[in-house]
Amino acid sequence: MRKSISDSITKTVRDLNKSGLVDDITLRNIEKLCLPEVKDYSPKKITEIRKRFNLSQAALASVFNISTSTVQKWEQGNKKPTGASRKLLDIMERKGLEALM
Image (tube, one colour):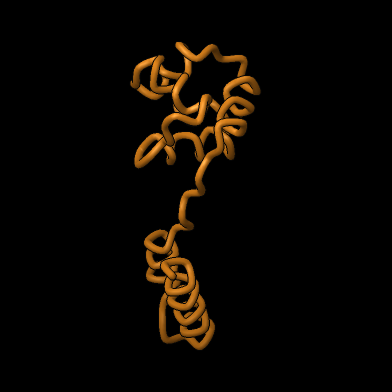
């Protein structure tokens, strides 16, 4: 539901921008507000991301400022990343480890 609403708003503002009714700065601000929803990460995907950057579970935990046991639980499927951790995984996957440093 959230995605369809943000897509609709963004499309409308883009159309208004093309018509000259909304300036470029307002368009960019609206696009920033309508950021895509962060996806869920499976245990396998979390492990793949961690290994892609040659990180141990302890190192990933340190980067995210969480416990090593939390990373272990994610990779075992006993717990799922939420909130900031999901966003950090998304940034790391899309932009690399350097984006978090």
